[in-house]
Image 1 (cartoon, one colour):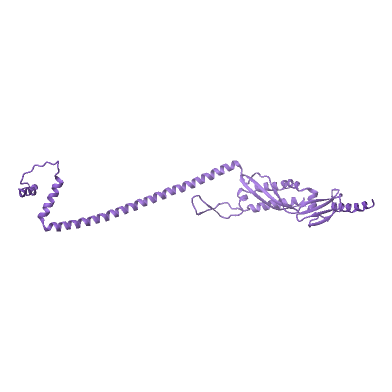
Image 2 (cartoon, rainbow, N blue to C red; image 1 turned 90 degrees about the horizontal axis):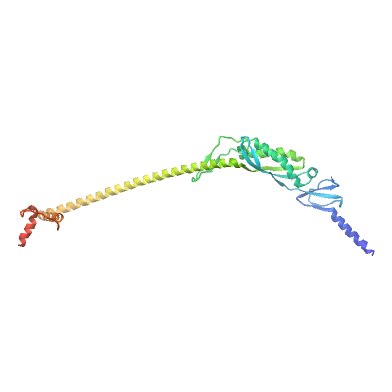
Length: 314
């Protein structure tokens, strides 16, 4: 019976020690409170710590960077163009005691960030024209048109004076002092997306489609003109080749006819009587057939060879 209290004491000490100990890792920081009041300095270094059990409470807060996503909304620019803006930010708790005393918990920080960052985003967007929020420099833009592999240069008369990076930097600088009151450090603010509102998008897309159609029509007309140019050149070359071939063929024929005539004249010149006989037979062949009827006298020059042939036969 006396051994039971001896066993109970170590167990009780272990339970008390377990309730008093708490661990802080690399991504956490702890504020210890007693009856709602902060006790001592916040624990920011990782390690094992102790507190009074039951009485003291360890409140954990993240030490690493947290994210904030704003609510997208319509904002008019200085040039009265309504755009859809979606911003985001990164923040961290640098004073956990102040954060605990003012906000209390991480989920409550989003509302504070919304109340501080969103108005600054709206103020800066409305203070500058659309191109200032979109571009960050006056760098010359190059783009490729449909159907053309070469780069086209696009210049604008408007000169960017502030730019998107300076606008986001200004938003962060304006919001940071207000967030410092809650123990929050604003690490960065960026605009995730800028787009036209739906009504403006339709007109912008319509203008873009019309411009692209105009460019496409230009290329089509240039293509038709180039095709006609190629066809015309082809026709000229074809006629040139045909005429040259005809000229050469005529020259060859003329030379051949001259050679034939020369040979025939030479051949027939050796026996004129034979030449007269052959030519008369050719005329008979061309002029007379089985349907021809010719009435001539027997002493006709045309029939002299026939008459001579008939006499010899008799």
